[in-house]
Image (tube, rainbow, N blue to C red; front, side, top):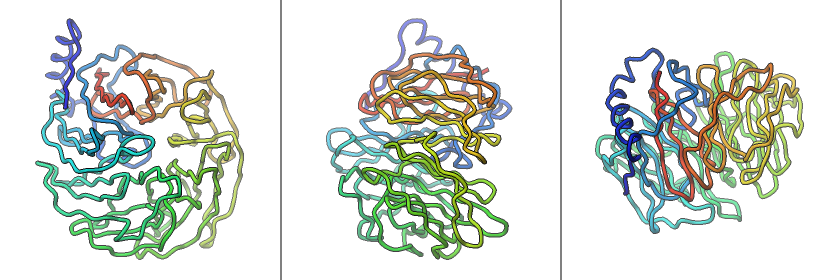
Length: 406
């Protein structure tokens, strides 16, 4: 692990910011980000007191190749990468980026190199999954293995013929650890023992979401064949919606709201809004205005904000009305990236390494700031936590922390 600090004035400023960062949890709205897509798994943070301009680098670290984003909890940052044919789960100090512990195991780097999963932090445990199906429950304090499992054996999970790797970031629901790895499954989070699963299916590249509808709670899965709605309490399939995509790539996480579910895929497949009614999924609309390839849109105040187009190419950032599918605006062309929303602002990581902030307003696209913080392929979504934004390059293997504290 190589730790890289900014030089000159940036180095001095970085250490000042790192010291000031100890007060982050005292700021109004500052918050940890403990899992994939944040506290509510919706890519939204209520954190305020941060500034859109003037981002300053605090630290950067080499974490290996991969697409894992970060989880931030109790002063620690968790992520994954692959170095020399070994996966590494990293636990870093949030203020300095220094290694607290790492857990390593042999794993091929594969096509689209490295792991895709963001660690899930639940109390004193961390849950991770490798591209080939190694599931770990680790002690958050020291990285020691509490239990582990091979999901290809435990759940008969299987990849598509392309073998691009498992990409599900685990979800904790009570005492259950929920996975979407072809089958949707629940394990005992304390032991790894299987509680229920929905049967064999080829994996997509999505991660599970929970949906509440009245008194019922469902798990939403998005595998290679399409959307799956499952009763969260017992694992019974409620309904399925066929969604064929070129290369069998369904990557974006489903977005539930008010008994409706938004799904989207790339390769010109487009998007659809479905309504769960009487235990059946019914189509509200379908179009090709929003084609989320690898990264999900964000639903904020009745509107979807997302990148329309293929990762690795140019496309538009769009705002689309959730209920109707009507496009309110689209940006000038960008290299397709990823985004989250915090305090009414879009925080976007553009492929190539630019960090952009814009208004999350359906009235018009308004860019507020843009700054180059990395280089090369950057497909991983950024994370704002405690006055800092964490950004990741994939093949460049670099994780950078920039301060945006007020």
